[in-house]
Image 1 (cartoon, rainbow, N blue to C red):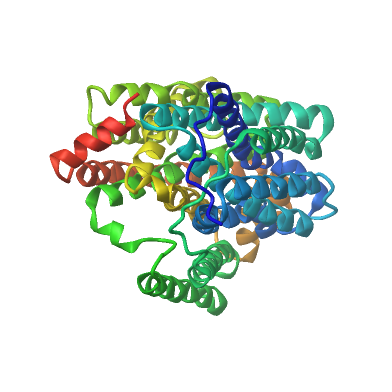
Image 2: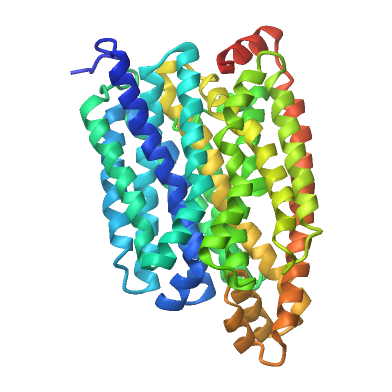
Length: 509
């Protein structure tokens, strides 16, 4: 029996509670990667493990989250958005609780991967459900509030995690995640209306498996490259296998009647521009959410609370400016707002590159704030633009494609940036296996371990090498962000005037 698209209009109170449920889930998501980032030095000290294992603390979650979002969106359209939302939350709650009792780093990384699967289902199901509950300008206001909730988690997650770590230890950081997940589950179970796409044909299993394996092999290959070398046979095999699987995925999606990823959409410049825009925050902003807490706590020896307070300057603008960006679309094209925002972020990255490690931390506030302000402008428009490119009935696919580009891009960017930072640090430390191990430990915030690995070098020399590498990395990120701003402006500015008017109207508040 087919469930109707929308059995009956929901009352205002029910809609508010549905929105609160999805916002609670959205606020929990950033806590799942900012919290462990702040706690990484403490986690690695207690659970042990290699530098690669420590990198997987973040990458395991990002990989499974990003690589299964499209599949979760297709499942939501086929089997029910509420059902997928609740099942995802149940898994998210279960594995988040298990992380607090992890006996070693292998268990921790494994549970992080499982937590990512649950997050993907909860996020895709929740966003697709929201698209059915609200229409027109109400829908865009709802998405803006979800974005603000995500920004709230980013803004205060590091500081809250730092306070919890200092008071109760790192295992307690998952308590807030559990609380938000439970609130979202209870409200969703009570007030969400079950909907599905009557034209859906189930999950594209070959496409889902090939895409997930492609991302997995690529991420693993990039993560092991700093230790084994880029010319290592296993590393090259992983990267080649990833490329072949991605080609296979594209072939599969062209053959199936209801693809998980509709490749024909890439014929439209505005759609391509939206996907490039989705990936932009990964290297202009998100990687800093992981790298900076590690630098502050592990290298500069700040307390977890102080590190969290510093991060508010970076992520705090997400609380307000995404909504302001929606208002600005009344007078300015979305392409202009998004491109200007990315250019502002590039200025902040360039500025931050000139502030050495160990400087007065007050000097970091202005460049971090500049980056946060810049990235907040496109952040408020991205979800609305993504939903506008497909029919409402395929909202699960729309959010799945866009969120996959964004989150998978974040996971891939984090793996690449970590590998690049490790390689740059090693180049400043010198040649040899000891320098390679020391560089990897510095990137994960283990200054003492780096000193033991490279006993002939003092702490100040290690910090100096790390500083040079970090500054050069920021230069690279600045160039990439500027290039992306230009491409996004060019692609999103193309298309018919009628198409542009429709999109601008859909994202205006």
